[in-house]
Length: 463
Ligand SMILES: Cc1cc2nc3c(=O)[nH]c(=O)nc-3n(C[C@H](O)[C@H](O)[C@H](O)COP(=O)(O)OP(=O)(O)OC[C@H]3O[C@@H](n4cnc5c(N)ncnc54)[C@H](O)[C@@H]3O)c2cc1C
View 1 (spheres, rainbow, N blue to C red):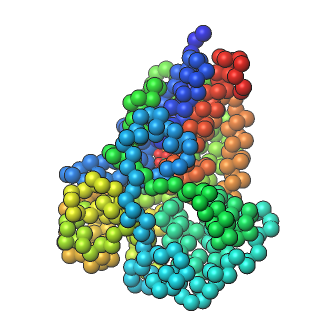
View 2: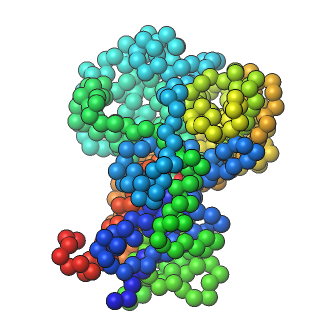
View 3: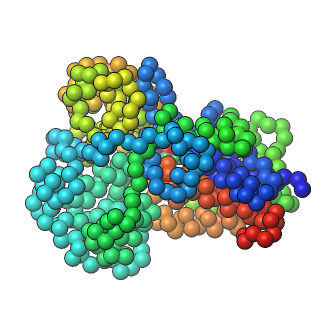
């Protein structure tokens, strides 16, 4: 029997995870299946970019993921990286906010929030009333901010939830969809009638995962998948078009003279990049993909010596509410999270700019971003030393924004894609924005695509 072929478009973590899972599913059915990943860029990993420079390990995109998802954990073990997992230090549990002119630790209980000045007495009283707030009855979507204001009060929504949305989505909580961005919060309210009661009920039963990375940084996983995943990867291969044929698809790569035939195709690029490929087959589906905005983010890594390190709090990092006189969304303290991210006693600070609240920052040049980061980091922590390391990464279209209405949009995109035989879609634009979400989604989509294609190889197995 000749091997069937799946082409995966996009060599970020979702595409590589899909390719790996497709091969696993085919092997378990003893079916012949060729899997080819086409990546437009010069290396695999997409947003995951780990750079080693002068004794520092700098992340351009994600700096960690939450373990505990079965698909993600299975992928890491399956590709042989179990020994390279690096859980974050305990210090990563300490989180900070900059508010009303000073750095404050987020102590996650009412007294702590009051004494740290994150909430005032009225804000704390309103927070404590949360279990008595009736649950929302209709099934409509609402913004993350309005959900938080309704349940926890406007003060907590403004002072805690707006910065939290900056930290996770580089997004605006007033525009993000609760059901798409924080589905667990929506479920807690629906199942328990209250977030506080729900958290108490679930305590000990569910784990929110452990912050984790790899010895050589987050790009180590995509690299390992590309090297050992038993599928072929072509970099510098930008897919320009997809054509339907009588029994599948033809994939057109920029600069190639011949098309690549495929029985099935998995779209694993960013939503805006996949829209032109879908457009000839479903114009409305393509328009829905384009409507998912991905504002730019600028990441500036600054490495400092021990004198500066002593002035920076120990912990995960700090978020800055808007209106505090900083353009930075916040900073992560990478050397506090994982060992080996910089020379001993030094500190690596990663400052984030841009996102949905300040897209103009994405238009800044590398030089301007670096100057802005140097000035703001020095002012924030009272540093006088110049950084020993400076590394700027601009991500022109960074984190997809799951705005109000996103769940309906995803349903319409899925309907458009799955109406086209052999086509499927994954990636962090649809069903989860984090690294582990993208990887897990890729595993599910890749495995399902292979099972559909190889259903006849072992007739005794269920479809
Ligand atoms: C600055 C930043 C910080 C982040 N921090 C965290 C974090 O700390 N923790 C966390 O969990 N997540 C974080 N994330 C999110 C995380 O990086 C993503 O969820 C994940 O990397 C997305 O993977 P993906 O494969 O879906 O997409 P991508 O990584 O975007 O990969 C898509 C790939 O498709 C390729 N492509 C596009 N079009 C084509 C085409 N026509 N032909 C061929 N190839 C194409 C692109 O070149 C790209 O390589 C962060 C993201 C950013 C930008």
